[in-house]
Amino acid sequence: MLSIDTIDSTGSSEDDGIWIVVEDRDLELDGMTLVTDGESGDIVGLSSRSCRNEQKRKLMPSFEEYPNLKVIDLHNYRYMRSVHESIANLPDLRKLILSRCDLLQKLPASIGRLDRLVELDLFDSFQLSELPEEISGCRSLKRLRLGGSPGVANKSLQRLPESLGNLVSLEELQLDKCKRLKALPSSLGGLNNLVRLSLRECKELKFLPPSIVRCTKLVELNLLKCISLKSLPADIGALRFLEDLNMMKCKSVKEIPHSIGSCDYLSFLDLRNCKSLSQLPDELESLSRLRTLNLTGCTGLLEVPELIGDLPRLEVFEFDCCTSLKSIPASCSKFLEDK
Image 1: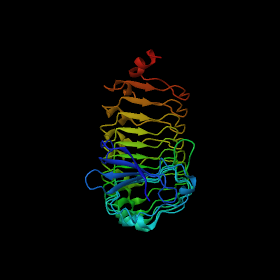
Image 2: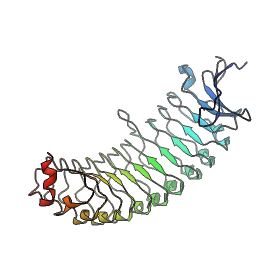
Image 3: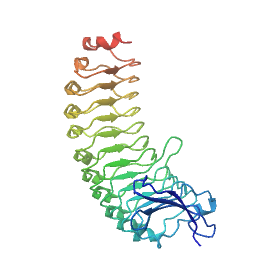
Image 4: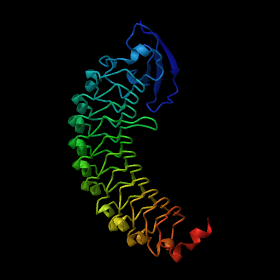
């Protein structure tokens, strides 16, 4: 018999429902937290975060009895190797969290049937080696997280499906610390609603696909510690609304494209420790919204644009340890005074 305790009936969750905890050691969902719809009474959410039974973390439970689920949170289901096939029969599923599922290696092709899924979180599931091509069926997906947090890295994922570019609703793509990821699909430019792309510590990534310049809504691009990255696309300036470009420790990048001067909204440019960078394009002087430019540790840098210090909104300009810099332009003298 199912025993439940009411946790919160005030609608404090985003699903405006009632939280209950399953308490029966013989049940498959023992220790799980469930959320019921405040009006219909349907079970619409399921979370394993309160589950202390380690044995329950070996197999994903069946969802056949809960066809109205909108949220599934199986964070830290450490011993689960596969996703239960019944997940494809949840037409209203909006959020699927499979973070820190240590043994999970792949998702079933049937996940493409979840055409209302908005968020898919696979962060810190470090053995995940592939995404199915059928993921393109998740046409409502806005947020996709893979890779790892500090101390965790995915060394299994080497490629992404070419169909990724069909996720036309995607706004955030996070691939941090996918250390064996060698390339992004050429279809990336199909993500015309993409706002944030994070590739932090993708250490084998050598190039960005040229089609990325079609992601014209992109605001944040994080390339921190992409140590094998050779260059940015020549027409990076097509990303007019780009505000934040982090290239710290991209030590193989030798130059910044001249077209960067067309990134009209760029306000933060971090080039710290780009040790192979020898010069900067004069077009940087066109970045009227630039507030922060950090060149610290660019030991190969020979010169900077003459009028860079006159940018009207520039507040932070750091160039410590630029040991090869021939001279400091007069326009930058005010930044010397602050040191």
